[in-house]
Image (tube, rainbow, N blue to C red; front, side):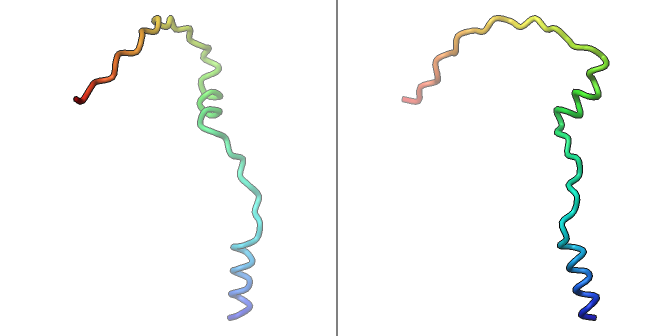
Length: 55
């Protein structure tokens, strides 16, 4: 039983190959890149309003 426990621990704690991690951005870009880009006309920025006062 001790040998089996050692084998289980060695298997569980052995260094494993890291899976190829792709970030969400990379996955979304790879999926939609063949469709082409979109050029949006951005509205001009407006000045920031005054914060509310709590007097």
